[in-house]
Amino acid sequence: MCRIFGYFNARATPHEMRAVAALQRHGGPDATGFFRAPGWGLGSNRLAVVDLDGGEQPYGRGGPVQVVFNGEIYNHAELRARLQARGHVLPDRCDGSVLPALYLEYGDALTEHLDGMYALALLDTRGEVPRLLLATDHIGMKPLYHRWDPASRSLRFSSELPALLGFDGVGGRVRESALDAYLTTRTPFGTRTVYEDVEVLEPGTTWVCELGGAPRVRRRAADLPAAPARDGRTAARQVRRTLRSEVRRLLVADVPVALIVSGGLDSGLVASLASEHGPVHTFNLAYRGTWPSDERHFAREVAERAGAVHHQVEIDPADFPKLLEETVWHLGQPNADPIALSTYALFRAVRDAGFTVALTGDAADEVFGGYARMRVAAERAAAGAEWSADYLDALSAAPAALRERLYTVAYRDHVAADPALPGAAREDLLHGPGTVLERITRFELENRLPAYHLRRVDHLSMASSVEARLPFCQRSVVALGRALRDHQRVRDGQVKRTLYAAAAGLLPPRVLSRPKQPFTLPVATMLRPGTLLWEYARDLLAPGRVAAAGRLEARVVEELFAAQAERPDDTFALALWALLVHEVWEEQFRPAARHPGPAGTPGASRPMVTAA
Image: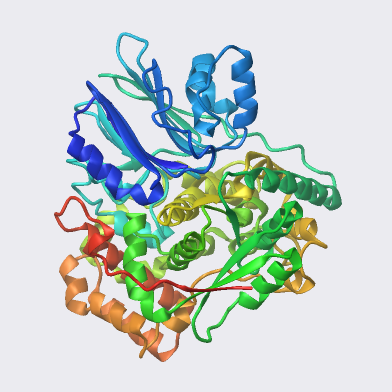
């Protein structure tokens, strides 16, 4: 696991390369290096997970093919054996060391042989001019940000958005429609970021360019779903068997591995399956004091059932303003999910306890149909009722009617010409092939999951030098989920029916029978008069400050505060939280300073951790 960066058909000084490396060194503290040649440069920050003494990047240094790589290749042992049988000499047993030889064997199709999570950059110098290949994994677990300048045909790229801003001339203009995209979908979807000149490589993409030429972009075909099971019992057995195999593979590392447990089905099932292979350590996050939706007792039951050493992490709500500033900086652009703050604190506690890898339960809801909005939309569609407006509102940080009131007339006119959802994605969601639930599942997996969840998990785990591994994102598991029929996902008011059946007997009955609730920050309760978070939000969203930006009606923001003070409400609280996060981002990234960083951010106190 690493952070990567570089440039192509461009110039960058050693100072720029060092600045970019320094801005994402938290994601790779074990080694930093870069290699430059006329017209191009590659660099990496290494987090050592496999073959701690090997793994020097760029892989293939000195040869005709050089690679920098961020991620984990779970089938690297099989690939190594195959390549060595064909005469290739590999320098060590690090997973990324197979990449130059794999490219020499298969060319641009090398990614078809990879099982794992990754973003990579490969330089081939065998032709008349150097050739660059960028590639991302099938579902977007490892993002790659880039700035392509069509006029000069030059490229700069990095694993993290704040690091990319370390290159001169990147991120000069914020996309004015970005606030609307953020409030509509809680973070920019598709290839877009908040910056006009910065994009994200889509999942499952290979991007190829020869020095001085224009890029060719190829999206790899989506994996075909597995053969559908004829009955629910067979489907549950397939899911359990496949998850058991993937969890076993993802536990392999040369560093300590931990498990994140929320107290619910998804992470609990991963913990249970992991415990079959020996003693495990589980981590759960809670908030100091008494708050609604506290899941620590469920998490402890899961840990006890798994025979785990359980680490209960507590953070003090008084630290939220400081934690929020750090979290927003590491994300590099606004993300309205209140869980982001908790995610950052939790992975920091995991690292402080001595763990470098952590398995999580992320993506189970997208793969197996776990969200209430999915169930409601499917039920309404089955009844012949309109479903899309409420579904899209459920994705938002501020529903459409509230956004209409929030925006000034000038801003409303501006964003009308630049819709938040990518056109093709919206068209497929509303009118594409398949049932409503099939279209929603496709939309969630291909659009919302990588943008909203996976980038958050990647950035906030690597902020503390922790590699997050996601069993539910493995190709084999996703294929099984995509093959399910509607009634095997959602039926009779129950979500994730097949996954619940797969977990039968592996988790405490109370965990399996409890109502589903999201693992998130209870902002509706915490954001109220008298709390430090409330005062912080009031200061940053003061009427004069809101009005000065010219995009939002300060009067409507004040009405939100008044309504939340009188009767705390999830919709009001999330909208205020989203506006607060956006304002924190504006403070850190809107100024002209080119190298924002956490150095000037006041450090929050470490969370308290207890182990049992």
